[in-house]
Image (cartoon, rainbow over all chains, first blue to last red; front, side):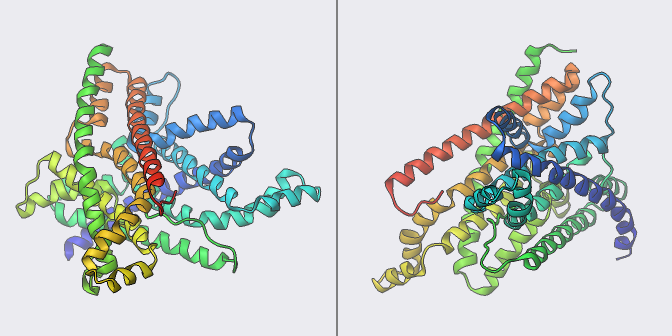
Length: 224
Length: 219
C-alpha cells in the first residue's frame, strides 16, 4: 500500500500532460471538425474531393504512424521545429478533426432537409440557417459519437510517449524500469485510464440527458 | 545511409509480420466477441456480469497498456509469452471486446418472437440460437465488426512496442537507416491505407452478397 502512495503522485503528474494532450487534440478536432463537416456537405466538388483525400490519409493511417510522420517526418524538414508535445497535439488533433468532421457531416444529414429549405425560403442566409436551425439539432445527434471520440482520443494519447511526450504512459515506463514493480505500476496505470474513460463517458451521458428534446432521437452509439 | 532498395525490402519484411499478426488476431477476436455476446444475452447473471466487466475493462484501457501487461507483467507470474503471441492475444482480447458489443446489439435486434416460435416448434434453445438467431445476427453485425477489423489492421502497428519488427517497427528502423523520415513514414502509412481499403472492399462485397441472398441484412 505504501508503494501505491509513493507511485501515485508521480503518475498523477503524468495525468496532467495526458489531459493536456486530450483537451488539445479534442479541441483542435472540434474547432476544425465543424467547418470540415459543413464543407463535406455544402462545398463545391473540388473542395469535397480534396477533403476526402485528406480524410482518407488522416483516418486510414494508424495513429502511431501519424505521430511519427508529424514528429520525425516534419521535424526532418528544414525550418520546421515542433516540440514533441506540439507534434503529438497536431497529429492527434488533425486525426480527430477528420473523425469529428465525419460525425458533423452525419449529424447534419440527420436533420430533416426540409427544415433548411424552409429557413432558406423564409429568406435566411445559409450561414444563419445552419447556425440557428441545423446546428442546435445536429450537435445533439453528434453527442454519442463525440463521447466515442473522447474515449478513442484518450486512449490514443497513450501513444504519445513514442515521440517523447512525458505523459502518464511515459512516467509509468520510467517508474516500472526504476522500481522493478511492473505489475503494480501497470495495473495502477490501467486503472487510472479506466477511471478517466468512465468519467468522460459519464459527463457525455449527462450532457445528452440535459440537452435531450422529447421526440428528437439521438445519433448512433458506437462501442469504441 | 541506405538506398531505397533496402528500405523497401525492409518494409516488406515488416509487412509480412503485420499480415501474419492480423490474420491470426481476426479469428481470435471474432470468436471471443461472439462468445462474449452470447454470454451477455443468454447466460445467467454472474456470467453476464463477468462478460460486461471484460468489455468495460478492455474498452476503458489503452491497447498499449494491455500489451505491456501481457508482455512485461505476465512473465512475473510465470507466464512467458513470445512477442508474437503477446501481440496476437492482446489484439484478439481487445478486438473481441469491441466485436462483442456489435454482435450483442445484432442479437438483441432479432425480434424475440423468433425465439419463441422456434421453441414452440420444439427446437432447443441452443439449436434456435445456432440455426435461427445467429445467422441473421451475423449479417447485421457485419458493418460494425468490419469497422472493428479495420481498427485492428491499424492498431496492429502497436506490435512494435512489444519488440516485434512489424510494418511500423520496420518503418522506424528504415527511417533511421536512410534518414528519410518523412518519405518512409508516408510510405508506411500508405501501405496501411491500402490494407484498410482492401478490407473495406472485401466487406462491401460480403454485405452485397448477403443482402442479395437473404432478408434481414442492414447497412
